[in-house]
Amino acid sequence: MPTSLLEARPELLERAAELQSQVAVIQEKIQALLRGVGGLQVILPELHDETSGRIDAQKLVTFMGVPLKRLAEGLQLNYKAIHRNPSAEAFQPALKPVKRSVEILHDFFHKPETVRVWLNTSHPDLDGHTALEMILANNPNAVLRILENAAVGVPV
Image 1 (cartoon, rainbow, N blue to C red):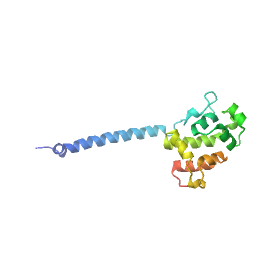
Image 2 (tube, rainbow, N blue to C red; image 1 turned 90 degrees about the vertical axis):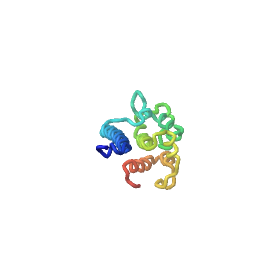
Image 3 (cartoon, rainbow, N blue to C red; image 1 turned 120 degrees about the vertical axis):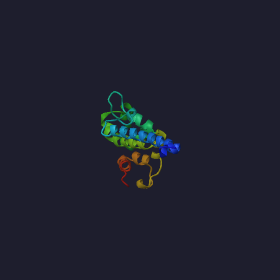
């Protein structure tokens, strides 16, 4: 005669083992998240110049799938100058909100091609414009505001 319910019903023992395994996986994920909280990280470091560490406009536009000339003109930057030195310090203030938007999108979608699709999809909170249109119309902060709100769960 079985001495416990688990001995009488071996499927319960199997299910308990499965649940323990799932709990262990979840605990590992929580620990990994907690290690990352407050930890320093650079998202998409490949978009930076290796020597200076600054955002490289050419690498950024390659990731976004737009010509450098379009971004330069859209952000009202001198195309010849940015073509010559795409990570110049003078361009960093204009490039930062664009790169930050791409970082958030990368966190959401993980794939550059999906980021590009989102950038080229009209958005109701941008009056039906695409994020890329807004960026190229020198309004990258409108896009960044929507994405930052979405990242923290604030409705737009």
